[in-house]
Length: 143
Image (cartoon, rainbow, N blue to C red; front, side, top):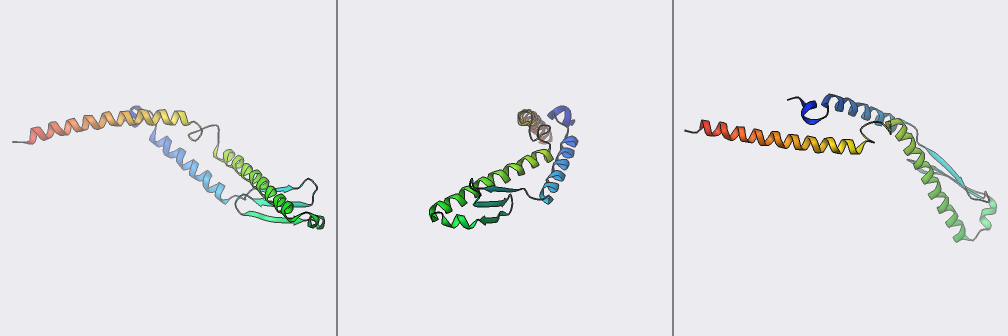
């Protein structure tokens, strides 16, 4: 069976693409994490956040201790959220660059879905033909 003709895709090319993808993912896993730093408007509080390790640092200027405890807690939490969002966005951008977003199997979902639908239909037809052939062979073998 010619899979490329029957399924509309080349299994060898698909396997090679998968190998490249997994190589890139291994590289990503071993790369350094993204770290973001955010600071309050007054500069009294700053947070450093790693995309994989979480909060790495918290700096409080002595003047921050004059803040109401609820306001200080809210400021710290807001800065942690901001830093996390920045670090995760940088991590995503890095992953997209490394994985080749914009060209390939990962980003062309419509093409992949269409090929899978076509492949499923072709496989179903082949299975039906194979079932019919098996039934004919069984009929011939019966006394």
